[in-house]
Length: 259
Length: 246
Image (cartoon, each protein chain N blue to C red):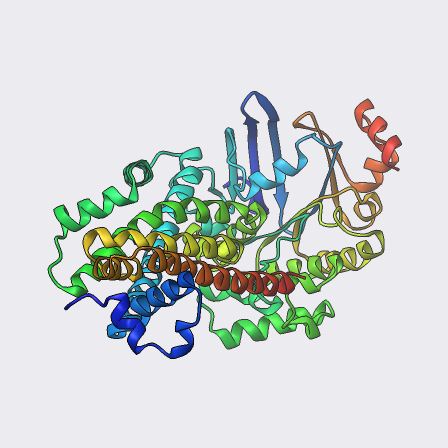
C-alpha cells in the first residue's frame, strides 16, 4: 500500500484546514493517518481487546496462584512451629523457588523464554494464552505476598475461635480466614490489576497484537511516531484513571460495611 | 480409671515460651458439674492454663486427660475433643464475615454434620434464651460488647459441649454490660454445666463457683471453696492479692 502524502491528503481535506497554521495542519494530517486512514482505529480497538483479555486472564490466574501460595506458606509457618511435615516442607520450598525466580528475573525475559523457548505459539489464540500464562505466573508471585499479608491481617482470635469449635485447620481457613483476607486485600489487588494492564504492553515482544503492538505497526506504515505514541500513552492513562476511580468507589463501599 | 467423675485431669503441666516459664507444674482434677473459678495476678499464667486445656497452647510437658483420653498425645485428633469443650474469649472472636446465625450454625453443620434446619432451630432456641433472637441476621460489628459475648457463649453451646472454658469473658466489656454476660453464665452453672472460668469478677466467683483456684508464678498456690477462699485465705500471696482486688 502506498504511503499517503501530505499533498494528497490536503487536497481531499475540508477547506477550513487549509486556512490553519502549518503545524496544526501537520498535526491533523498525522491524526488522520493514525486513526482514520485505512480504518486504522479498528486495529487500535482490536489491540485494546487483546490488552483487556490478557490483563483479566492474567489477573485471574495470578490471584489463584497467589492465594494458593499464600495459604501454603502460612500453613507451613503455623505447622512448623509445633511439628515438621515433609510434604509441606517440599511444597514450601517449591513456592520459595518460584517466588525467587519470578521476582528475580525481568518480565520481558520471562516473555521471551515463554514465547520462544517453552510454548512457541503459532496461532493467535496460542499467543494470547502464552501472554496470559506468562503474565499470570509473574503476577502470582506478587499477589502471593499481598495475599499473605491479607491472611496475616485477620486476627488470630478468629482462627482460635474456629479451632475451639472443632473446625479443622482447612475449614477454619476456608470459611473464616480467607473470606476476610480477600476483603482486606481487594484494594491491593486492584492496584495489581493496574500494574498488569500497563505490563501487557510488553507482550508485543512475542508478536501478540495488543494496543502497543498495533501502534508500533501504524508507525512503521506512516513513518510518523509522534501522534501514535502520544495517543498510546493517553489511552493507557485514561484507562488507568478510570480504573483508579472505580477502585476508590469500591474501597469506600467496603469500608461502609465495616461499620 | 482413677475417678469417674473427673472430666479433666491435669498432671504436672508445664508451659514455656522460649526462656519464659509460664506454667511450672499444675495438677488439678475438674469434676462433672464443677464451676471452677481461676484467679490470679496478671501474668500469673491463668489464661495460659485455660488455653492449654483445649490445646490452643501446646504444653511443654505434662498431661491433660479429657474423659480419660490423654489429649497431649500427638496421635489424638484434638478436633474431636474440642467439639466437646466450648470456649469463650475475652475478645469475643465472633466471625466477622458472618451473621450471628451463621456464626452459630457453621460448626454444628460442618463438624457434627447436622442439617441446616436442625442447626438453625437449635441456634434460634439458644438465641431466644439469651434474649437475642431478633439479632439473628445482624453482623457482629452491629452488636454491643455484651451482646457479642452472649452470642459467643451460645455459639459454643450450639456444639453441646461437656465443658465450657471462659477466658476473662467480661474483661473487655463496658461496666454496664458485665451483668448481662454474668447472668447467662449463672444460668449455665445452675443447669449443671461444667465450667472453668478465668475472671477478675470476685463477686461472681463467690456467688457461683464451687471451687476457687489461685494461680501465681505458674503454679496453683491455693484452692478452696469460695467461703474459705475469700474468708480465710492461707498463703500470704493470696492475702496480698485479695487485699488489692476486694
